[in-house]
Length: 490
Figure: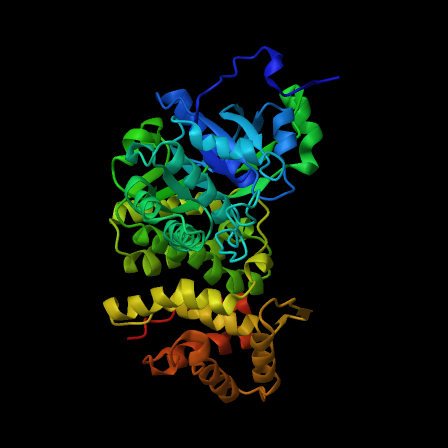
């Protein structure tokens, strides 16, 4: 019988003073934030423990406490061109509280003078205002409501001491998450009539940072746990698997680096004045390449991202699309952009992640609008010509929404009105090249889909139609093969 992972094993697990309050105990926060704090504890003088608050009534508090906050992180993927697979026990979590049964203990966290940072990931819906929440609730239902109650307790306990504020870094996947969280907390402060002194303390003593997080966390490796347990030599019910890549962009003052020294631990954490270029970089390069790749690779007969980028012809198409058509449109140093793109390429090649193209295909029209169309338009503005590969991906997207890959039906996943719109267009096609030109013109004219009538972009309709005709006549393989032989359209 193997030992259970806990602090009684006699290993050199550390105990740290609680400096970080974390809302959220799920796989992502443990594999991203807690791993980084664990790394800072090992390599710097941060010396900080994490007390976790379970945001919902049901969660993993009991399971984490049974293992004394310990869990094993497996990192596996491609790093610096080599296959990487490594694991370590993360020991920075001190305890986990369930505020639905331990509300007084939760509020008492506010009285700890060493507590300095608050991080969160309560899903995109977590930063929400519930008008029925009351300060007297134990607890308020929403995450911002619980947070406001804690902040108010701290304000009162330390008599408004400006040195006892927090650095708050939400990780929820919404734009300007720090601004959203602060605005919602201020709503509660007014709803609950907590006073101008408290509101002033929120503004002056606390630093709400918007942040951008990036790491693929696949979670608990259910299918390979027997093999992993044999390798570890102990039982761990909370193993979590992630890729090696990580990026945390925090928008805030530079002094944060003095208190949160992630850079001294070699972590990919950037504290910046404006996170917008980094968000744009991720959306255009990582997400944009995914969306542009999907219809081309899928119609070629490929099913996963790793297969697509590893394919001689499809991979070359995607690589040149990133390097030649997306990167030149971005406003960051070229070396920094290329380094990020190289890391993205290694992530795409990760043999341990089965990322299916069909899972990427969800809502592809809106994704193309937000991820790829800005690169296409910026390329035209700066280069005076159309980017051939991005335009071809639009041709492929229209072909994808015909709903067939050869004789095989495609399980399209999008809003009903999008699917009905494309079904009507393709059912009305008369089988001619002229019919495809009309179909493309109708697609591009839909300013409610694209934000503008794309037929107004000189040469775009003709070039998209040419690509679509080639795909329908000769198939994706031949259409892609002949793409590089075409001269650029000015």
